[in-house]
Structure formats: C-alpha cells, structure tokens
Amino acid sequence: MADGGVDSEIVSQFLLNTCRLRPQLNMHAIEAAKLCADVLMPEYPDDDVEEDFIPLITGSVAEFHIEPMLPFVSDMDVMCHCNCLLAIPQGHPPPTQLPVEFHNYVKVVEIVDSHFPGYVYLEARYLLTYCPDDEKYHCVEYDRGSHILCYLPVNSDDQSTVRHGPAAFKDNSDKSVLSVDVVHCCRCLVWPSQAADWPARQRNYGWPD
Image (cartoon, rainbow, N blue to C red; front, side):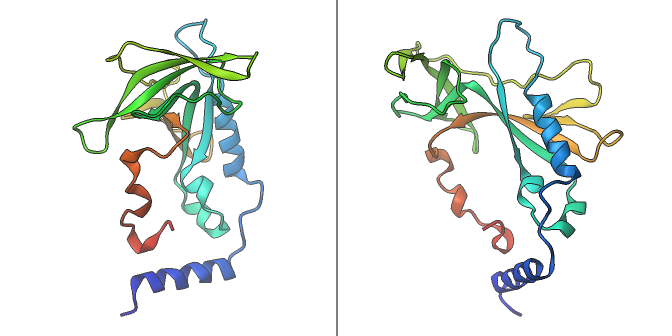
C-alpha cells in the first residue's frame, strides 16, 4: 500500500489540476460578509461601552478555494475579538505600539497556565492608554489576581441563537445558506508558549499542511 502522505499529495494535485478555483464572489462569501456586519453591531449590556468586535471568517468557508468542495461546507465559523482587549504571554512586557484597529484604551491580560489541559487563565495585568503626543501606549498595572471573563453578546430576542460552549450557534437554515458558529476570542500578537506544539501536531494525512 502506498504511503498515506504520498496518496494525499497525489489527490491534492489532482484536485488542483482538474477543478476550477472558487470565484471571487459567491453565496457563501455574501453570507460571510453579512454575518461580519451583524457581528460589528452587537447589543451591549452597557450603552456607554465603546468597544467593537472585529470578526474573522475561519474554517472551511475561508480555507476551501476549490469550487466542487463548497457544497460540502456545512457551516460558517467566525472568530471575533474585541478591540479593547489584548492577551500577552506571562512575563511579556506590555506593548507600546498596537495595530490601528485597537481602541485608545486597551485591557491587557496575561496568559497563565491552568491545571486543565488545553485551557489557560487570562489574568488582568495592564491598562494601556494611547498618548497622541508620542504616539505610544502607556501602561498602568492592575492589582494581581483578577481574571477576565470573555463574553459574546447574544441577542435574547433571536430564538435561532443558542450557546454551544464557547460558541454562539445560529441556525440560519430557514433563511440563509449556512448555519453559523461565532466564537469570542482574545487577540494575542505573539505565538503563546502554551500553543508551541500546535503547528507540529499530528494531522490525519498531513492536512492541513
């Protein structure tokens, strides 16, 4: 029997040689764009909150670029992070520069190991304030020991949206193409040590590469 990795490479090459790439605009792309617009306008419990959620389409809708594959895509996966929350590895210095989408006030949490495999704590560590004079963020330290609880606003009037663990699942089967899984995330600008083994993890048939 041929090596599984060789078989995978042959099949991948066959698909690339015989199937056309996905066009730039299709129904999945339209649905994804509409969903991102919905995520950008959540209902907050506090009317004074100025934070925004920045969505990112992930999973098969974002990664499959071969047209015959698209009918087998079952849902849309969306990760969204708040522009006023940032994670850094434990012991890492707070940043003085941030990407433009971040707010002028940013809570910084440290990624702390937990005794649950695959889980970490997010401990509130700094508050960053942007200073236009020197165009840098200045930091103030929080008292140690407080933790950040991430939440994803879910419209209570929308009966099609339910919570599935960390995800808000929305069944759109009656009015759109795909159902949606939205996961609220916390952005980290460097690769955390807790995920160091992930790029080299064992993958079936070497996919994704």
